[in-house]
Length: 218
Image (cartoon, rainbow, N blue to C red):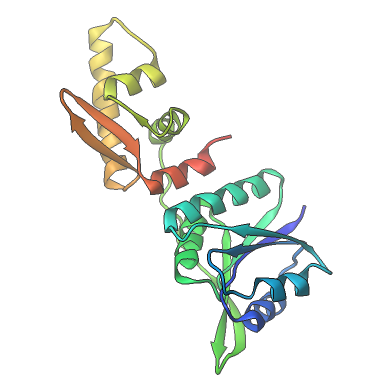
């Protein structure tokens, strides 16, 4: 098992390197996360690559797109049995938010440096409250949407995907009522959006829903 750190990079190289050292956490691999030019990538990369495995990842400035890519990395590492930390000591605003979203969804551990006058005073573990757990029915809905391109054209289509076709009207109405109830909950949680189109209601995953789906799919 490896201990892997995801480290979004800002411009304060010494803060980043000192936060890794002072964290006291083992580290065998680091993902250096960048979203724009002008950061201290080369300095941090050169300082770490002689001791550990280093991989550079460039992400979008869009918070949710970045969170989705971070979650893909996290899930891959967790599936390999590795331990994952996210270091937000000098993360740019967009990557900091993306990192927190990723930590909430994946329940990853987060740490960051507390600084004074440009120096690291201490490193603390952040307690990030996880996004509330979803029941099996809601998880099945998110999986079905993700596996069908992130959206379906109607509730009927979603029922067909998950439950299969049925000619039993009573059974169908019960399925529709149950699914409508869970879809409303997912919409309230910000994981899906529903839009009426004629007689049907199109259902699609929101960016947050797509991020959540990363950890659900095998």
